[in-house]
Image (cartoon, rainbow, N blue to C red):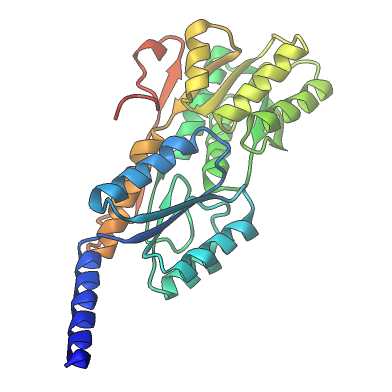
Amino acid sequence: MNTLKCLAAATVLALTASTALAEGNVERVGITVGTLGNPFFVPLVAGAKDTILKVNPKAELTVVGADYDLNKQASQIDNFIAAGVQLIMLNAVDVNAIAPAVAKAKAAGITIGAFDVSAKGADVTVMTNNIQAGDIACEYLAKRLDGKGEVVIINGPPVSSIVDRVEGCKAAFARHPDIKILSDNLDGKGSREGGFAAMQGLLTRFPNIDAVFGANDPTALGADLAAKQLNRDEMIIAGVDGAPDVVAALKLGTTRIVASSSQDPYSMAAQATDLALGVIAGKTPAESVILLDTKLVTSDNVAEYVGWDAVR
């Protein structure tokens, strides 16, 4: 009789688990992002977490940062597999090199939702249209320079978002034959400190820089600080993110930064997570990759810009 009761209980538990998954109601979720040191990732992670907890308030969530280290992120995915997660929300540090780890997780029956940057093999991806983001930022710089001048691009980690932004920026500058790119390969590491160090080197090498494109806002802010410290005020700067620090500086007029292609990290992550939960529930999305266009934030429109810290 006890054996029959145990079998019945096991059957009920199995049915309950399968029903939960059929509804996208996950119990354990792993979230790994490029770094937890960039303010951008605070609303990004929050968007994913809030979406999961709306479905299951008791879900176990593990959030880790990979510090843009591929081996570290692969180990994190291994840990998620061992922990028995049903969903991994992945902000990949390398779009292609992360593929073996993604394949391993999918072989274990785990759904992979990529957000902010792409990841080869992911079930769904939602990210900013980063080519467009780089294009509109650098087109704005070009127009401010009347189509001529010497410019630099401060690059970043080899994640898809950075690669695409630089591609878009170069395309914009290429439409203006009298604009010369002095440098485009220095790694600002996606951080204020990295942007500062890269800009210091550029300012030492080049006696004149008319404009700077930072691959994200922390990079642009670091470049701005380096220029201030060396009393170099000939350049204008643009970035990508629409970050609170850039918005505040634009409002005060205390920065060389003139524009930033804005993102909505919270909504982006929420949409990616919602689609991934749908995959778990057996719903095939109409599109597996969704690109979200950006809008340029400048001193002219910053007063109307609704930023990351808006009430959700």
